[in-house]
Structures are given as structure tokens and as C-alpha cells.
Length: 632
Image (cartoon, rainbow, N blue to C red; front, side, top):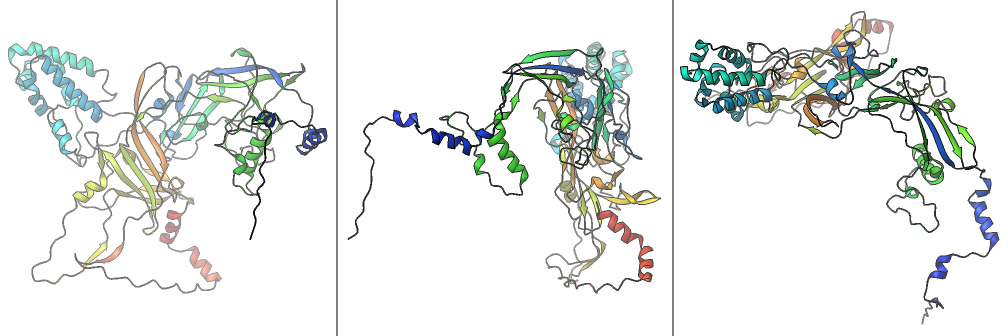
């Protein structure tokens, strides 16, 4: 019969003080542990106790649209350099200056606010009964491809158009009896009506956008021409381009050549790697003596023997391989060299350029060490640097051998916006490639209607499709031959075209139109494609691109409110299909389409010869354009 034994310790004391003391009486054991941990191989080093810093600071005071780094023929409005304009980071928001759109007239929100304002002025003067006459004489547009929803149309039909209303109210202020009779105002009410008109004009004058016409412009096809793009927007690149600088160091320009929108911070700009001397007369040096503190981070190994470490982060459990150098370096830094770093605060004003001119460290032994910029010893070091993309290395230091220009020593403290309010996209355009149709397409997903509400172009196109004609009674259902299938009305082709006839390998995509029915507008309805003419081919990759317009609202640190319309370019959803096909037999409703025969493998290509080479050199233009249309 098996027997089981169990050994149990019998403590002579119920306390744990003796165990927690961790007494070790073997000196050889302590020496062995020090040898195992490599403590005997260490060097005698001192800890820093004082850091003296001298910082050079330049406050930014100028900006301009475009960038001198953008070159090329026909780069668009955002590619041309504009004039330098004043910039005050304490009162101006750089995102608003860069992203704001010029207005050719009041938008839907201002139109509604102006109509409601006139309604309140009439009510306060006791003339609310005259509002329908003003709405009839100065009607808001409610028809056309951008016709608003029934609710929005009902509201707009009861309010006057402020652009058409302003000239009439100016005549009422001048006591024009003809204008007063036009709206049915009696003689005793003309004085009150003139006072209400004067108050409305005082409210309207500072809010009317620059360039607002005296009367609404006629729109022949129901689609008004798009206003000009923002001064910093490059419609051929779908990106913003601008530059900022300080007048105290004019040779140093921070250029943003490919700002896609969104958050504007230090990483959006580049600085030339020029060695600019210190301008002693233009700036002041800030002398600071600070005490450095050890750098700490989450999951850092504890330095004390009985200190509990954070169990949420375990660098020893990181799954990595010998070839994953990035993770291995991170683990080595956090577990071995993490306590070798010290940090000292160096404040800098918001919206400024700064660099450390002098830095000396005093240790516990009284020795002083002067530190230079890290790029002096290691040209590859470019953390938080503003150097241009020189390629060749992960840190942007040239070819990886130190032969490239050194990174910029300047640090840009951007006047970035805090978290603000952003509306849903008021307009969205998707750019994609269609491999089946051998084309690139610009798809207007959403545009703003006349009331300012998002309008789904696909839903509006489906609702406007005419019903298919029914067959005559007694006729058997038959297939219908289509020369080409119908493309949705909000899809616009991007046709490849050489940028320069002398260099046909450089391709641009020209926004073209398709022959459609009279119910489908030939031109785009939105602002993004309305101001678009062509794109560079590399701006439409295989992954696609989506460009969105939305409203932004935020408050600056001085309490001022800022609202503007911004654009943002984000990644798309990949390639798509427009359904464009030629020579198609469409089955009648209720019957499945005839299955197509399976594709047969292509015959083997003939051997290459001199005659074949000559023929391929003079091949058809369609084959050449096919390669250019789908290549990136």
C-alpha cells in the first residue's frame, strides 16, 4: 500500500521580521553576486547636481501662403509664394490663417441668421405682417441639383435672401416711398420700417463676406461656380503649403510643404539645415540654473530592494525575435540604461523658435562639463529636429554615414490648438482607381445643399433614376443591349494626360465629364471638385484618398472664439469599381443574367525579335495610357 510523506516547516516564531531582514552573513556570496551583475566592470562616475543653460529665443511674427520648397509647373495656388503677413501667436490661430476658405457670398448659416434677424427686427417694430412680402420679393433659392430637404426648403421659403434684401433696405433707410409701397407698408409705418432697416444693415455690414455682390448672381444650370480655393491650398496636390518665420532671423523659414490638415504641430514644418550664427543684438539669452532630476517612465525597474514594481508593464515578457532590433533596443534601454538619464525643464514661449546656445553640467565632485548638440558627435541624431527629409536613414541624417548635412538645432514650440469642436464632414470626395475600367475616379460622396445640410449624392442619384420601360403586352421578355453601362452621376473620371508632351512619362490626371442625361448635372456640385482641374498622378495611390471639409470651432487661450471651414486629406478605402462596361446584354427584370464563359488562359507570347521590338515601340496609345493610368 503506497505511503505518502509531507514535510512541513515548523517556525519557532510567528513573526516575519527575521525573514524580511534578508540577512546575509556570507561575504563571498555578496562578492559573487556583484561579479555576476557586472558591478566590478563599472566606471566611477558622478551624478549631476546643477545645469546652467543659455537659450536663444525668436518669436514668430510672420507667415505667408505657399512655400519656397514647392516647385514645378502649374502647382496651383498653394504652390506659389505669397507675401509675408503679420502673425501674432498670442491673438491669431495659425490653423485658421492657413485653412480658412475665401467666401464669395454668405453661406447657408449666415443666410438663415440674416433672415431670422430681419424677422426679429420686423417683430420688434410691430411689422411682422410684412415678412411674407419681403420673402416673396427677395426669395431664397430652393430648386436645382442642391435643393434642400422639405424642412429646410420650408424654412428658407419664409425668409428673405440677405444679398437681395440689403439693397431694398438701403432704399428704405433713404425713405424711398416706392420701396415701401413694394412691400405694402402704410405711410404711418414707413418711419418704423426705416429704423428696423437701419438696425439690420448695421448688423449685416460687419458680417457680410468680402466680395458679396449687390444682387444674387444668375445660375443657368443650377450649379453656381465654385469660389476660389484657400490661399494655402494646393488643388493639384490636395495639401496645404505655407511658411512661418521670425523677423529677427529672416533667413530661417519653417516651411510646411505637405500639410494634409488636422493638427498643426512642430512635426508639420521643416527647417533648412543651415548654420545660422547667433544674433546677439536681436535676441536675449535666458540664463537658467536648474537641478536635474532622474528620468522616469511607466514600468521602470525599481531601484530599491523591497520596492514593489508596476505589474501592468513587464518589459521582460515582451515577445520579440533576434532580428527585431527596435524592441531589443527598447528592452535594453528600459531594463539596463533607464536610470542613466536625467532631465531638466527648459520652458519656451508659445509660437517661438529656440535653440540651446550653452549648456554646462556640474557634478557632485565639483567638475563642470560643457555639452554640445548631440548631432556634433552623432550626425544621425535628429529627435524633435526640424531638418528636411534627406532620406537614407531612419533619423533623416543623409546617407547613413554622416555625409549629409547636420540636423537643425532649432526647436519649434508651435501654438497648437487645444481640442475643439468639429462638425461631421459637410463635404467628402473619394479618389480611387478602377482597375476594371482602367481609370481613376473622383467620387462626390457628400456635398452641402442650399440649406447647409449634408446631401448624399448617391441617394439623390438613385431617387432621380427613371423607371425602366415595361414591355408591350404580349411581347416576350427580351434582353436589352447596352453600348455602355451607366456610371453613377456623382462619379467623375480622371483621365491621364502628359504634363509635358516632351516628357510623356510624367502623367497628370485631368478631371473630365461623361455624357449623361439632362437630369444629371455634368459638373461637380461640391466645392472640392468644383475648383479642381487636374491632379498629379502620384496623389491618387492604389489605397485611394479621401478629402473632407468640416466646420471647426475653438477658443484661443485669450478667450476669443474662432470658427472656420477646414479640409483634411486622409487615406482611402482601396480601389473600387464604377461598373463601367461596354457591349452588355441586360436581362429583363426577374431573370438571372446569362453566366459568362470562364476566361481562357492567354496563348504564350511569341519569342522576342527585332520586328516585335519595333512594333511594341510604335504600339497603340490606348495601351500606353492603360499603364500610366494604373501605375503610381
